[in-house]
Image (tube, rainbow, N blue to C red; front, side, top):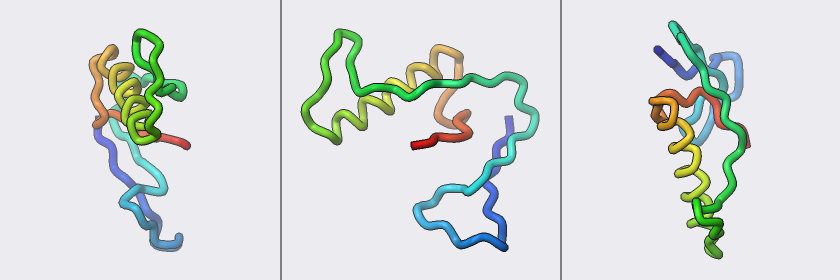
Length: 79
């Protein structure tokens, strides 16, 4: 799969290093992942907000890994 971020020159310049759109070429399979909660496998939720954020991303990564994918396969993350 080849993924390229796209930022149209007629649109406002983005800040934060993200793409306003993505072009995906030769994608043979996709995986749709729901929002991930900041909870460990044994049901614990960290009190610290930053740790909750890290854990939610970790949970996203393990969902990708279960399909043989990585964060490089991520096309869109909506908040």
